[in-house]
Image 1 (cartoon, rainbow, N blue to C red):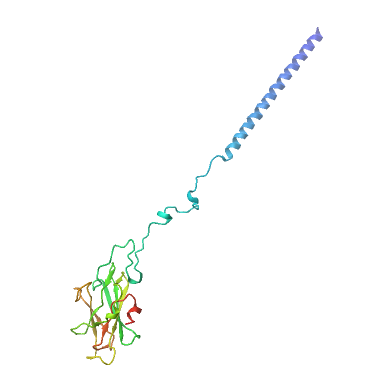
Image 2: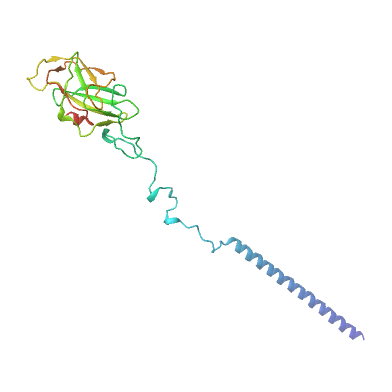
Length: 238
């Protein structure tokens, strides 16, 4: 009887130990599974998705390029309105053909002596206004109190009217005497400059410029002036 109880107690103790061991194993297995799931989730969060594609770059434009251009990829802004060489270019953006005459109110005329060619003076007309003007024909000149204007060199007429942009200049050469055939030669002290209109004869209603000539300037009846030219070199060829 006592032996039977002992065996029963031993069997019960063995069964209890087995149950406790099984419970411990299951708890360990569950912990391992939870740890594996947590690790997998963390790995998924830190790894970028391979399914997402970068936004397409149109026409393989290099990164950082400004694609805000007009037709054909060219910038549509920034028109060029410059007047090269003192002549109107007529490019897009210009306000239209220049018709205003260069007169006393929008220009300043100066006179200077030159070493070559001999017996010549140089007239320079600078645009002091805010808009371009046309230097029509030739300056109309009078020495001192002369009644008649100085003759004009017809051979110096340019192919096109010279347009002067603000701040730029046109030029005319003044021949004082050609040879000994001239008459009424005298030393002259002042030069009155009138401005020619676009068409017709005579001068504009603008007030003339009165210039002081270089000391010792001598002129005779052969004195003549060129048409306005766009460069000093062109003017001094006459």
